[in-house]
Length: 109
Image 1 (cartoon, one colour):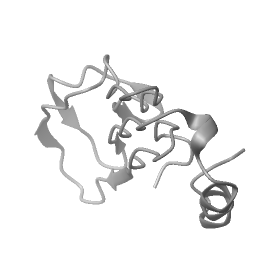
Image 2: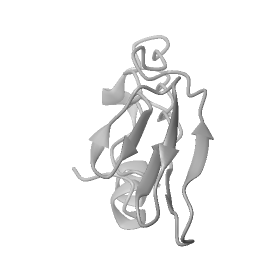
Image 3: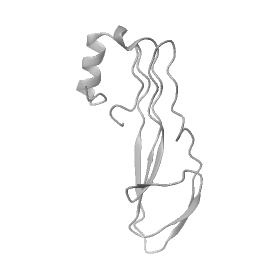
Image 4: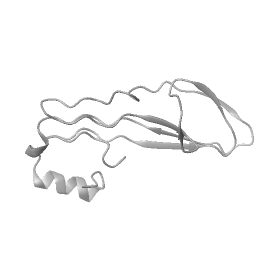
């Protein structure tokens, strides 16, 4: 789970996930991705904040999420899924819910 990737709100959005793949073989692989929500984050509703957009990262650099490319041995491809938007004003989120977010590592604040 990606800390801080959800939209804040009375009910926070779902956290995005980080999935990393490293090519361990000795041959290259052709990869084709179709990742959505990389530019427009999931909106919050009724005063909730938007979530964080998705990203596709190759060896630490963001790449076009809708391109085909060759993954070479040893390279790492990371998919960061988008976070969901929050619902309701963030000021209405309970202190207990925020404490759970911090304890679980989902919130950095």
